Image 1 (tube, rainbow, N blue to C red):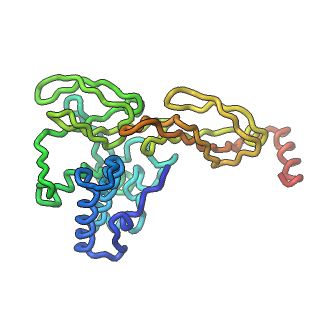
Image 2: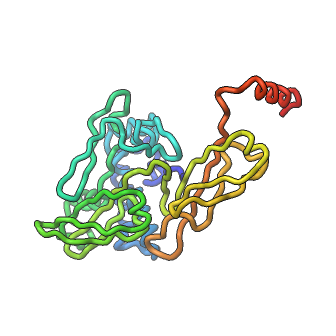
Image 3: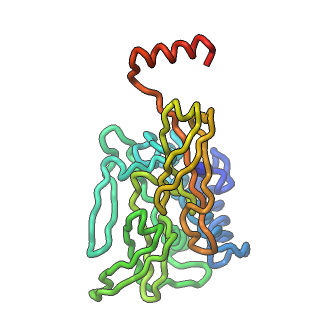
Length: 299
């Protein structure tokens, strides 16, 4: 999974920047990358950058969070407070997290610093448009006034990949809504009379970065050495791929077009398979003899 950009680099300030310098840098970057006014033409890229800018400002404008970031980096705000696993450490809810429900909508909040965890673990960055409008005194400098109510809805990982129809209650009325395939964490959908922000539950096998899917697969030492065929899970079901002889642990393989649907645009992302070579914990006497003979030959 792609590494997150440094928050100081995102805002274009040095690590020793003052609070006023950070605020000025945020104002400049947020106005430039606001999706309603960005001149680049790629609205999806502008929204992604706008979200990054707001994340950076939330952390660097708060002395406590800034101090944690300076010491631990992005891991200070990831589930487990740096005890990440897999590709991005998205191993379910952070320690101390609790989940609430209001009608069909769910929300997650974290208690301050679960046992052994960071007090910022699982930090919710919130809606970047709320932060933007709050910064400008509750109103957008572009004159846009959002009067429609906004809600959030949590859906399963595969529902985000395939799309799903949900029945929800809005202002006392039940209605069916369609979530398009390819929605990502934080995607905002305008249904006309209300705005919906989508949250996605982590998956036990797959992780996601944009339209790309990541999966980790363990293979035995013998297969890594001699090569062969293995079955790989994808969001469309299992597929068979060939492992080359001499494959090293950590090798990354790409399956073109096996990722998520691009929400805005055509085609799909890719799936990246990271190979982990499993080392047996226990060996029989014959197996030990074989390994020792290989060791003597320098293998």
